[in-house]
Amino acid sequence: MIDPQRPPRASSLWFFFTVTLLVGFTVGFYTATRSVTGTSPLAALQRLTTLVPNGQKVYEDVLDDIQQSYIKQPIDEQALFYGALAGLVHSLDDPYSTFFTPEGAKAFQNDLDLSIEGIGAEIGFKEKQLAIIAPLPNSPAEKAGLKPGDYILAVDNVDVTSLTIDEAVKLIRGKAGTKVVMSLRRGKEGKTITVTREKITVSSVVHKRFDGDISYIQLVSFNEDTVPKFDAVVRELLLKSPKGIILDVRNNPGGLLDSAIQLSAEFIGKEVVVRERDAQGKERVDKGDRNASLPRIPVVVLVNGGSASASEILAGALQDTKRAQVVGSKTFGKGSVQTLNDLPDGSQLKLTVAKWFTPKGRSIDGEGIVPDIVVADPTESGEAQDTQLQKALEILRAL
Image 1 (tube, rainbow, N blue to C red):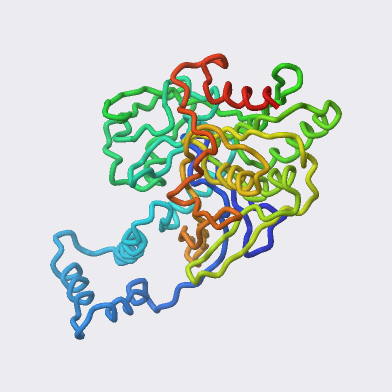
Image 2: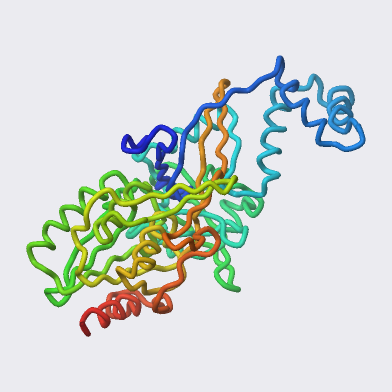
């Protein structure tokens, strides 16, 4: 799903794995096409020999031993080639960079379909371990008791601690009505939770009012319908002139970069929303392209450990410009950009190529957004027990 509003280099591809999870924190996911040279699959890897010092022929020796001595003959050279490429990417020690064989690329593309079924949660890496980033509201994951920060140890008794996100996705996704058993670690406690997969339907914007004059807007995701739905809410707000706005991006794992920029512009206009820095240190700046519709109404942004990617961009932009107070717990810290390179044989390379920074240059990746007012995550359900929401209401009622 390519966003037509971005230039070709920066086509934002939003992959939203609500089947099993929303995987990938899709802000700034670009597509490109690359070519592979060489007269045979293995010939394309010959230049790896130059990486070995003193002329030692380690690559050739390993390849010769496999081709001549491995017990299962004949050797599938195509499989060796793909295995070597996968090994190259794996050696980067980056959970968001992956090599897909042609078969894997097809499966990955199928997962971009929004009409999918699963548990309705996002996974990512936290401290180099697979973890639940955010269950969707009213999703099977939330109803079963999965929480942000739960580390995933096993899926249906299969150890996933050494798997990539994409490999874990294959185990967790499945047809509606089927069950998946997840072994987790929550703090120091081990848990086993069974989740029944369902077809996931998500409304990206939820709006209601408190005290008659405080508007509460929950952003569940940043997808293609988020901006028009938010614009409809804004039109209503402008007619009623609320005393304040609570913008809730808790457990929102991200989505389209353009949605984050346009929603930020509703509050800060044509100011800088986010900075992108590549491997060469070259910086790209994204600004709002509209005047602010809500430039003066007081705003509180609610965040937690399930707020990631686009959510962090919005929260960081409003925080840096002093347009809003940020309340809650520290966000997840996913601020990297991936390209998806289509290769001639149908394989694909998903590669991290840049990092995101707030308008003032604060790193998002691995750091997250620290709230202006830190309030621990609620331990009980219900609005009255939602300590973060109650703090936001307290701030706005005092104005």
